[in-house]
Image 1 (cartoon, rainbow, N blue to C red):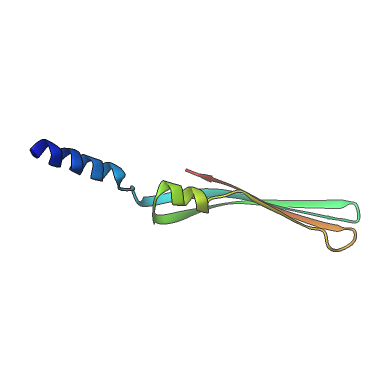
Image 2: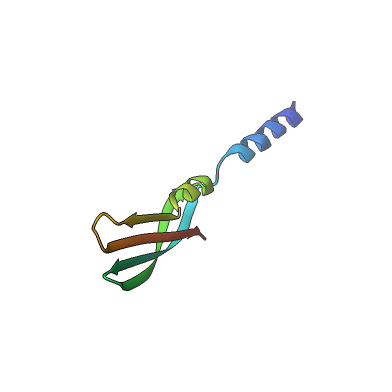
Length: 85
């Protein structure tokens, strides 16, 4: 009986998720092109995801890229490259 309770307790602890503060680092880059000229700027930002599991943090800390070219002779691209520390 004691061995069964010990095994159940260990299995229960193994199934719990470890929630803690996790840091996501993102490098944001904006590139604008108009009339043959291109301007680019970048910025690095760190943010903390408070009391979260590693799986949830990975889902929140993602890479995104978007392009706006609705205006003739103008294109803007926004790129965020994020990594979980």
